[in-house]
Length: 105
Image (cartoon, rainbow, N blue to C red; front, side, top):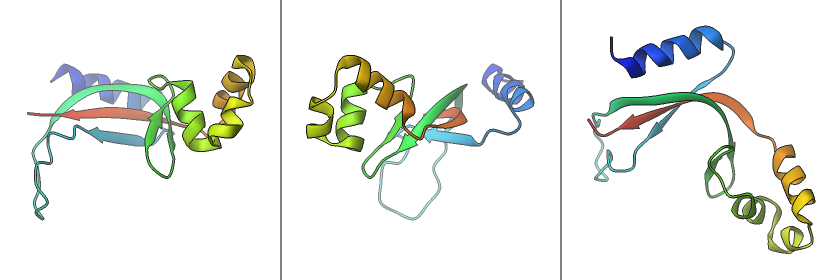
């Protein structure tokens, strides 16, 4: 069995309550047609995500400043100390999940 699939199955067994979120590489979908595109299983991990009006952010991968500016607004972010910004970032409504990369085949 492919290592990525085996790792995903282990994460599912360990965290059956978490949603599984496939994250599809943008290079897979290369047209505007109504078709299906082939992808390949990539790495899976337990993480947290946040959906804003413009983006999907991942807790472990994001710049605190960029997230807070989009979610809270530039002026509110500027008024925060570094400690307040980190606390605000941590307090956002993050959703824990199993994220699975779907890569080019």
